[in-house]
Image 1 (spheres, rainbow, N blue to C red):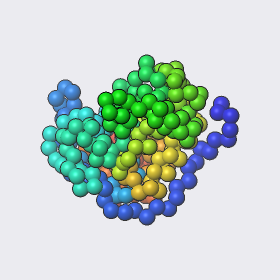
Image 2: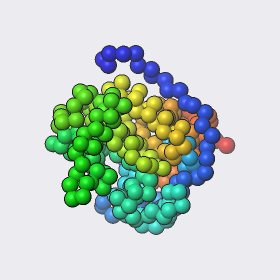
Image 3: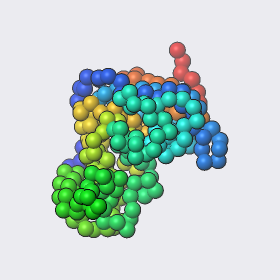
Image 4: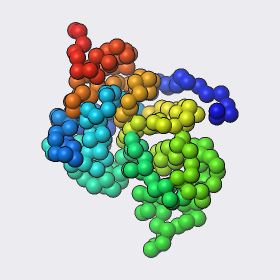
Length: 267
């Protein structure tokens, strides 16, 4: 399908964890209907660590992600990255303080189908590419070409409309744009949903490569195999709460399944 050998198992490099980068303490978030969807969630993520969030979809994961990205209001609790308080700051401010966000719905939160690849690569980075009152299109063109080569985005033509790309190549555009910006904290939400096996392999390896750069990474996925493959610790969300946190070495599909169903593990 992709014209080359695909490795289904990812290999993690040993990464010594650093200082705590992300701190989330007892945050509460309401959904669009006003119902409390995130109920006193707390966790932290260290430099070089991947914290996976597992759970059946609809248990508060979306609202949690959007609150951390500045897209939803945090009703109570605190949230900081590298010591900077970020609760209820604007998405622009949060990104400037070090967040890269791969959203669970790229069409709703990250891209515009009728824009070219180059234009989508510059979304949210207008300050970086501004030249006085104008955009520096030659720099955008060069950086887009470099990113397309690095992330194997095909065809290699930044003038193509984003909506004309395959799902895998669309997702690689988002991954390239978000991970090539300055960041300390990466949220990867459903990062391989609806993409081909070649793109899955590339995205998984890219996330693990960011881990070696001492980034703090929050991985939210409905795919337990993905959570198990990439995470250092796994937190399970059920009914808006984190009901258990397991070290990867202690996690099994059975244990995660029990927690995801609202059960408790035996001592």
